Every structure is written in C-alpha cells, then in structure tokens.
Amino acid sequence: MSQLLSAFGIDWHLLLAQAVNFGIVLIALWYFLYKPVLAMLAKRQELVAKGVEDAGRASEMLAGADSEANSRITAAEGEAEGIVAAARETATAEKTRLLQEAEERAAAVARDAEARAAETAAKAKRESEREVARLAILAVEKILKKNYD
Image 1 (tube, helix red, strand yellow):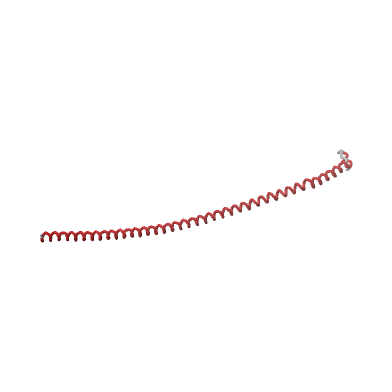
Image 2 (cartoon, one colour):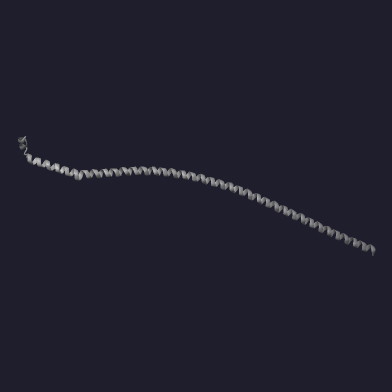
C-alpha cells in the first residue's frame, strides 16, 4: 500500500494530517455553523407555522364576525320593520281618532248652528207676532177712532 501511495505521490503522514484537519474543520463547522443555521431554520419554521395558524384563526374570526354582523343586520331589519309596523298602526289609530274628533266637532258645530238658527227663527217669529199684534192694535185704534169721531 505504501508503494501505491508513493506511486501516486501521496505522503500518508500529510494525508493523515489533512484528514485530521478536515475532521477538525468539519466539527467546527458542524458546531459553529450547521447547528445555529438549523436552529435558526427551526425558529423560522415555527414562526411561519404560527403565522399560518394565526391567519387561519383570523380567517375563522372574520367569518364569525361576518355571520354575526349578518345576524345583527337581520335582527335590526326585523326590529325596524316592527317599529315601522307599530308606527303605522299608531298613525292609523291616531288618524281614526282625529277623524272621529273632527266629526264630533263638526256635529257639535252643526247642532250649535241649528240651535242658533232655531233660536233666531223663534226670535223673529216672536218679533213678527209682536209687530202683527202692534199693527192690529193700531188698525183697531184707527178703526175705532174713525167710528167714534
């Protein structure tokens, strides 16, 4: 074997020293470079996995918020429809009440006007009766004066 190494111009002492140096460099690189790089990659992998997990949770929360917003909007629309219906009913009742009051007032005004008209007619009738009576008395007086003079 020694002849074979000599034939290729390889010094086995130097080869052994280089192998030892290579082992030392390999161990140093393993310890100072490969392990920290692997640790950094593991941390980054955890960070990326956490980011993906957080994004998934955020997506779920967004979907939940959307469904909650839709349910709240639906509830608000139902409540608004109820309020509008109640307002319409109240307005209809108020309209009916106001119309009834107006009809009652109109009837009262009509009754009052009829009473005044009746009173005015009675007064005119009394005055005309008085006037007729006075004229009758005057006519009788004239006739009696003519007959007695």
